[in-house]
Amino acid sequence: MERDSGHAALDEAARRAHAYLEGLGERRVSPSPAALARLAELAHPLPAAGTDPTEIIRRLDDLGSPATVASNGGRFFGFVFGGALPATIAAGWLATAWDQNACFRSASPIAAALEDVALGWIGDVLGLPAGFGGAFVTGATMANFSGLAAARHALLARLGWDVEANGLFGAPELRVVVGEEVHVSLLKALAMLGLGRDRVIRVPVDRQGRMRPEALPPLDGRTIVCIQAGNVNTGAFDPAAAVCAPARAAGAWVHVDGAFGLWALATPALAGPTDGIVAADSWATDGHKWLNVPYDSGIVLVRRPETLRAAMAATAAYLAIGTAEREPALYTPESSRRARGVEIWAALLSLGRDGIADLVERCCGHARAFAAGLEAAGFEILNDVVLNQVLVSFGTPERTLSVIARLQADGVAWCGGTVWQGRTAMRISVSGWATTAADVERALDAILDAARSTVRPA
Ligand SMILES: *Cc1c(COP(=O)(O)O)cnc(C)c1O
Image 1: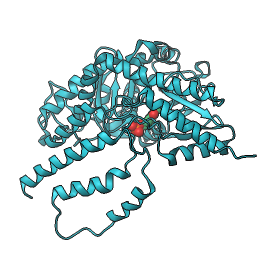
Image 2: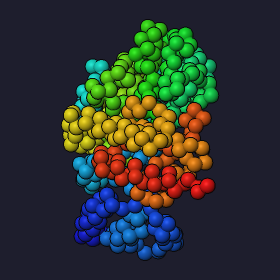
Image 3: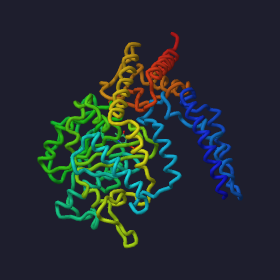
Image 4: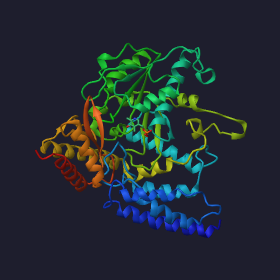
């Protein structure tokens, strides 16, 4: 393949990416049925001869861009996604051109250096304890997995068992305590670690989904307690201070699933709900949600880095790993890995300390505006809007589901559905940097239009 045609493809991609991003504010949030129908054109046999890179980019944009969901725009409120800050997209382009393998310092000094710096900044922004460590993984699922692997190592090592060498057969039993509202990805991580998704002790929760600390079982040095910072439905926080104090006294390990909510630590405005979180032993969070970096990007953080290293390290003579500095691959489940620290570094630098707090507070403000507008129109808000999540009911489950379907089909905004403590609800999550007050107004209008159109005339 000619180098020149590769460069032309880069220019073509940049030009088309500009056009895509510039049109994002006005395009449909969900793709049109016509755009989806055209995806069938992709399904042809692989040609015998190669295709010119520029032609590939043209085809990708013509067929692909219209079939994207505008989750990087200002009116996508589904799941808890978040967009991608301009600096992170641009940094990601350059880093893709570098094509670095971030596994070892020797394979990419720049990737390792950016990870070091980004980790330090994250610790500073979140207020993590001195000496903490961490690693950059694909998402909060793998961050939960990695934090829990560190926990499994630490507790079993203290009981004289080398779990990495000997596995779990014959090992002393560990207990895992979770809240009734635990995220499925945490249960999946437990399953992958041999700790079992159903072998957990589930602690009852209150109306907001917060673990009731008075219902905790007795804790000891064989117990991993998993708490949550940011419930995917309500945004509520488990009472970290009330869990961490007895857990610490008993020698138990506390892991925090803070996929999006951990970023609330960046603002004093949320000091109440986040109180005590930094007293935990490990934390999982996402870059690709509230920090608004491109996929895929998760971060595991641990109070004692040696526990994560013991769980993840693998060495071989040819790897020639240094010992003085942090070797990324000794802390991650992956070996070869893209340099995703680049985008995290770019996001932190582009926002600055104040910008991170402002992003979090702005999204929370938008969520409160949604709740106020919907309540004023006579609809029931099912949660205390303490963070960026709003749950609204439009009456019967059937009506709520048809409002959601209508909204999604209209394409002005996008919200998903959920069932919260037996009630069917529309779930609104504000996690994107691009959302403005005008976007919230337009989305509110679209939701109220959808609600009006689902009322059948008597
Ligand atoms: C999104 C989310 C996860 C899973 O994160 P991924 O990045 O999708 O792997 C875990 N826990 C919570 C609370 C989440 O919101």
